[in-house]
Length: 287
Image 1 (cartoon, rainbow, N blue to C red):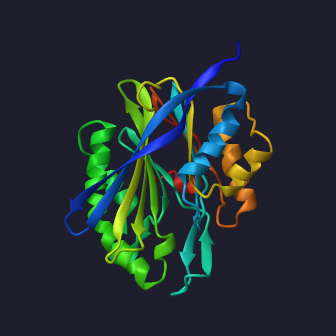
Image 2: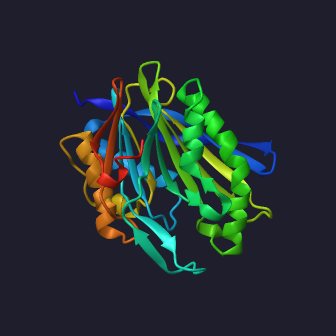
């Protein structure tokens, strides 16, 4: 008998509108899974192709791979950030020392996209740290984070609009931790609707594991992922461990895309807490 795993095969999208002070209309898209059994031997190819359906391709300077098993979650991220030179929206310099995975209390947070805007005193990680400092479960902490982030996004979208950056301005974030002794993560994408003025914030949200699928193997690729998908279409990506698989997938994108680069940080989250598999020296002081 061929062993099987339950994975997400497609989603139904439910659209609601919520009014937020100072943030205009926010559209929430919650992904609802449909379960299907597939052979383990085809799992990697299936997951990688599925990842392509979730992520909007744009000029990311990040690749983050999150792999969830029944016992743990592996998060792997590159270290490159792109910094605009002057007012240009075309030419960028690179910094290969950015820490894209950070831990606050019992929650790990991984981010891609527009994470800091000095002129607006805007920092996604500072908001995440403040949200995680409060009581409650990982879901309570995410709710507090969303309440802080959404009102601040209108100013970010307006600044991006003024500099002709709006089509590529977006934020992806994952909250990773334990809930009822089960490894879980929530993946959110925030992006402006360029058709509205002021830009509405469109939020796409997915919860892992999905209901009734606590034993499933699931993966999300945040940020740049085109080369990962192209490679998987030729042959499945193979590795001895899930940690090795996450590192290999990030490295595929680093080797192919100049916007992605630097050392790869890897964090494991399980019932015993957070464990750094590898972390660059510059991030030792980051929580």
